[in-house]
Image (cartoon, rainbow, N blue to C red; front, top):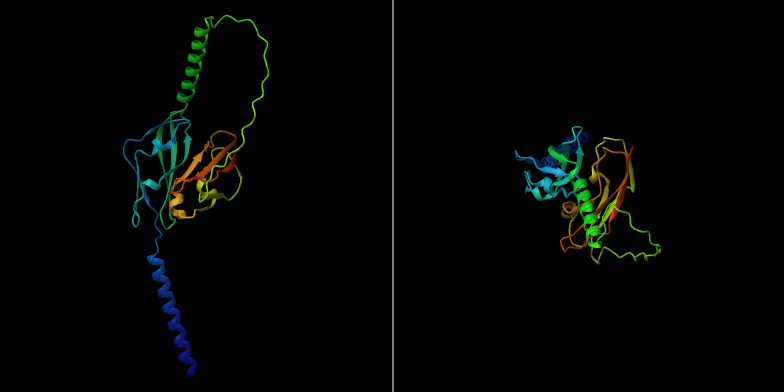
Amino acid sequence: MESKKITALLVTLCAAFAVTNGVIYVTKDHKGPKISFSDKAPSYTAGTDTDSLLENVTAFDDRDKDVTGMVKVDSVTPLADGTSAKVTYIVKDKSNNITIAEQKVTYNADAATAAVENQTDDAAQTDGAEAGTPTDVPTELTQSVETTTPTPEPTATSAPGAPTIKLTQDAVTLSKGDSFSYYEYIDSMTDDRDSSDYLAGHINLEGDMSTQTTGTKEITYYIVDSDGNQSTPAVLTLTVQ
């Protein structure tokens, strides 16, 4: 009789435990934000700031509400037609739920190069005109003097109280055309005042993240806290083969 009472008590406790866990699971946020795009997609010129790609993007979360400011451009992948690209966006809510979305934009790969070439040509013509020497006539060679410019001492980029960012690895190798998601290589982000959720929305990236061309490139990560302090950069070497 006593054993039956013990068994009944254990069953009751297990049921209560299951219900409690069920309530916790149900109340926890498991749904990521929704990324939406307006009808007019932006255009993008290779090598320019990707902030323009956020002009028609909004993000809304059931619990955190408007999280548009947390959306980041993950990658820009030129398509085979040469005039368009696939842009991948990523956003994370306060419960660490991540949403990834893509849109197709107009892509210009040659404008930046053409602009640099035009500036170089203009500068050469101006220098020739100022010197009074035709640019198509060779001038007399002069003896060159070799000079050595001292290498400047490196300066610290982080101040006391600045945030820190640590990567899971220093290098990664991908095949041509593979998807590259910068966020999965972040191990930790810390700050003396700001939370990791805040820091996640203030990650800055420098470098070419495209996997459409083979080669080795460096991608620099750094974060800026609410006081304007910048972390020491962390570098990931990306090899596409």
